[in-house]
Length: 146
Image 1 (spheres, rainbow, N blue to C red):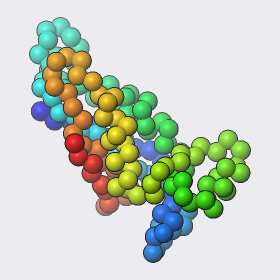
Image 2: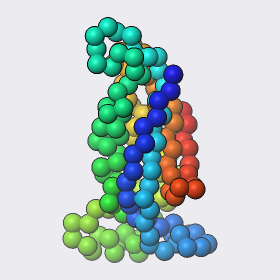
Image 3: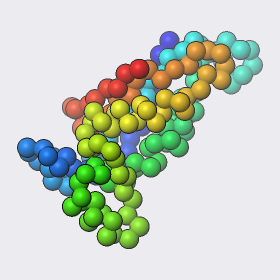
Image 4: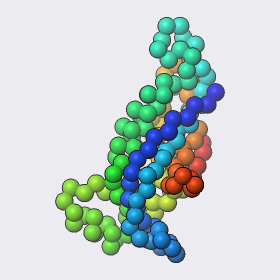
């Protein structure tokens, strides 16, 4: 069985070597989907009976591990010195420095790596993170798969 939880957050970025508009500072209303697989929990009397994982738990883990940090932050590549220096000059600015340019593909990969160990098999139901999908726009997304 697979389940998916969708969350949204706002963040700024730029792709410094891009040939078009994405080389400029801009932001997106990102959407992230977390897909988990596992057996349906059959333990009598537990609140998760009949579920792979409670959707609110999927959400809370994603927010704690990733979304709250990225929400209303600027996601900047460590090699983008001009923008990084500018952001560092702003007091208390929420900046996330990444080892790679903040493309949808790289964000999906980073998110998968950060979230993979956070979803635990607490009920012996073989819970696993299967996919992280990051939408940069409603028409453009990247998937990182197990």
